[in-house]
Structure formats: structure tokens, C-alpha cells
Amino acid sequence: MSEHVVVVGGGILGLAGAAELAARGHRVTVLEKEDRVAAHQTGRNSGVVHSGIYYAPGSLKARFAVEGARSLVAFARDHGVSVDVTGKLIVATQRRQLPQLDELQRRAEANGVPASRLSREEARALEPHVECLAVLRVGTTAVVDYVGVSRALVALLEAAGGSVLLGQEVRSVTSDATSVEVATSQHTVRGTYVLNCAGLQSDRVARLAGLRPDVRILPFRGEYHELRDHARHLVRGLVYPVPDPALPFLGVHLTRGHDGVVHAGPNAVLALAREGYRWGDVDARDLWEELSWPGAWRLARRHWRTGAGEVARSVRRSLFVRSVQELLPEVTGDDLVRSGAGVRAQAVGRDGRMVDDFHVEHAPRQLHVLNAPSPAATAALEIARHLADRVEATA
Picture 1 (cartoon, helix red, strand yellow):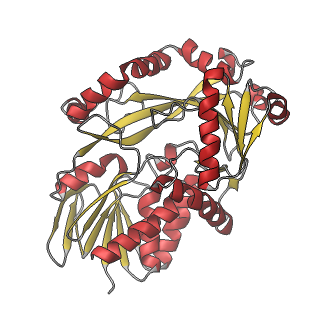
Picture 2: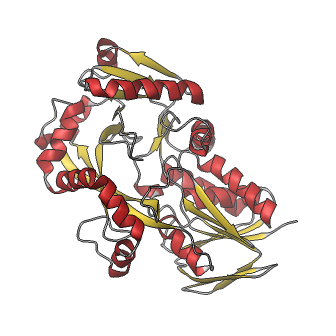
Picture 3: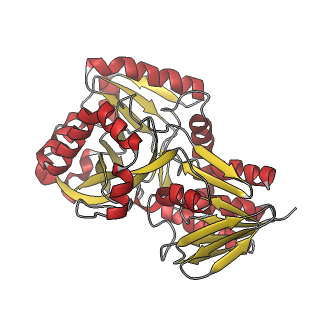
């Protein structure tokens, strides 16, 4: 039976889900509150197509990332979107990191990700300016223009009869056994099913729809610098540190994007607004929701030392430069200039634990994506198939 699915959110995940549903013969209307698609997480990330090496074997993140890396690269090539399969180096600079590098190699094998251990000399042949003790080279990592992918998905959606309505901030969601009604800042859209892919606003949309999810979105700002033109030669591709296994962040890394710009970062600091891309961006409602969520305080108690270090690195540029120098000793403060920032929508439970995998909740005629962390952009096409299956199974 054909449904009229109202998709909330015009990021890559909402657009991929919409295009998949439209391809299956459903009528689809996408509601995006901004004046363009891919305005937030999708358009402000590093552009990396992740391989799936980091994620626990058997998890949805691992499966979706491995399959998504293949399908997204193929999609970009088929639709003329800029993409380059560069591979990347995961670099251990201290002996205490070697066991975790071993664990990543084990995960690579379990997840079916091509990865090979390199000596310092072999790694320096690929990245002559990088410092390391040992390296894991991952061959399937790529860089892509995610905004370009999003626009291609819009074209597919519209060709299949769907539509994207911009400037539509959702104000209410109601549903009964057969229909849904979504009221926005502009008008009301009636359909038969609602799919919530609102990212930074996803838990709010779920509450508007009558759910009481036991997670809250906390916004973490990722702050980037970039290498000035004269220093770009220091990095040929993608260079990552060995990540802290206790946190869902990958640490300060170096990425040469599809446009040739080399970014360094990010810091990960709790933002003072859900769309707070600068320290000066403060939203009283957002801040109150953060401070009133018990999980935020429990998270802070558990990781206060790491958080303090991230804040210090954000406000003291010399500390950020020092972090970059752990991978790239030749870089100086004069080689780096502040670049853009992104905000990650991280779901946190009442117990203070960051939700590590994809988290979806449903109600009659409703499906809500309440946690879609990295590698969600990488895995967007695979997640879209999964969401479309869920919509059809619960409609």
C-alpha cells in the first residue's frame, strides 16, 4: 500500500530516506526549517567517507558503515559528485596506543575492512611529514562532497514525484490510526506517516509528536582549523590518531578534502546552543534543556577531565597547535588558521552515557531517528533502506 510519508529534516539522512521511499512508490514530502538542504551536520562535517573500522563487530554502525562506504562512493560517481578514495593512516605516536591499534586491526578483520599494518618507514613513504611509531592503513576511506550528494538525492526525489519544502519549522505533530498532520511555521501538511530525521532537533520533534524519549540531544561543537596554502603539502591524504575507546570522538586529525583544503581538528566542546557554531552563540532554551537534563551532569562527572582539556584547547590556540604537532611536528601556529565548525547531535541517556549506536523509536504512524552519529553520513543510503523497511513494516 502506498503511503504519504512526511519526512522532517533535509539533511543527508532525511533526504536519503525520502529518495528511497519515493523510489518504492510512496508519496514523500520533506520539511526543512532552513532555506536550503544540508545546512547543519551534513554540510559542516569533514567530508570523510568512513570505512567502518572503528565500530564494534556486529553493531549496526559497523554493518552500515562498511556497506555504506561502498554504496555512497558508487552513488557519488554515478551522479557526478566529487569523490576520491584516498585511504587513511591511523597513527600511533606513543607506545601506550599500540594495544588499541591492535584492537582496531582486529575490528577491521572482523568487519571486513581492508587494513594493513605499516612500519614507521612505510608510513613515512606515504606521508613524509607525519610522526609515528606504528600505523594502520585503511584503504577504503574516501572524501566526498556531502552537500553535492544531498542535492543529487533531492533531484532523485523530485524526479520520483516527491517534494522538498524549505523554511518549514515544525510546530506540532499529531497522528491517529490512519493519518498524520504536521503543522509548520508556514502551513499544515497531512499525510499517512511521519519520519523524523531532524538531527539536532530530533528529540524535540519526537516530544511534539507525543513521545517521551529517555534520551536528550546534547550538541557538541567540533572546531576546525585549516592549513594555509603554503603548508598544505605537509599532508597528502587523511591522518588520524588512535582514538580514545571510551569516547565516540576520533580526536584531532588531518583531512585533505575533495576541494584540496587540509583541515585539522576538531575540538569537541559542549555547545551553548543546538546550532551554536561559535562560543558567542547562546540560546537560553537550549542551554536550559542541557542543564536540566540529569544525564548531562552525570556525563560531566564521568568525563570532566577530558571536557576541560577540550575547552582549554578551544580557548588556547597554542594547545590546539600542540595537538596537531603530535601528528605533524613541522607545523607551526603560523601554518594554521581558524576554519568552520560543526555541531554533532549526540544523544545522552539519563544515566549520562552517550548513546553509541543508532537509536530509533516509533509510535503509531511515526518513526523517530533519535541518534544518528558518525558514520551516519557515510551510511546514509544503507540507513535509508533500513528506515524505509521500518516504515513499511509499521505503517
